[in-house]
Amino acid sequence: MENLADAPKQEERKLNLRLIGFEAKEGETENELVQRLNTELLQGQMRLRVKVIVATRQRLATSQASTSTASTCPDAVLLKFATSEDRQAALRGHKGLAGTKLGLDEDLMPTQHARKS
Image (cartoon, rainbow, N blue to C red; front, side, top):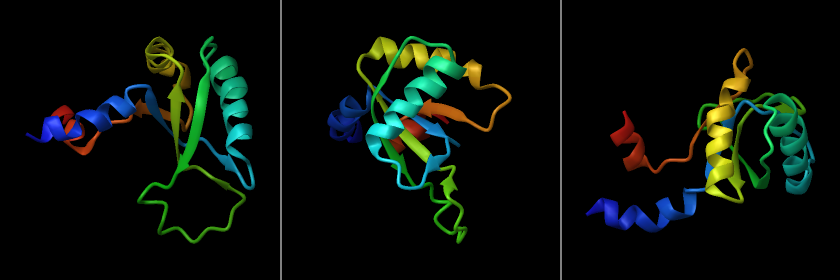
């Protein structure tokens, strides 16, 4: 029953990946974040020919308790790709992040996380 209820939300998330550890710059707009992700991370570090079309910063539960006033914050960034092929290429290419503090994972619903575990 819960699978049917989650279906529309799962459909919305099928082009998403979650990037953890990417430092956001204070005052950076979403357009600037998208540009920086595309040039520095995807095309630069990961050497992929894919592009993020939307990037949204998200606070992680563990970082909300932090009282640090640093100008950068290594929280999660929700990435939305134009196509599922781009998303898959980025997910496969996350090996290019080895040795960094960055992590890339699927944007799953709580029921999907439970099933995956």
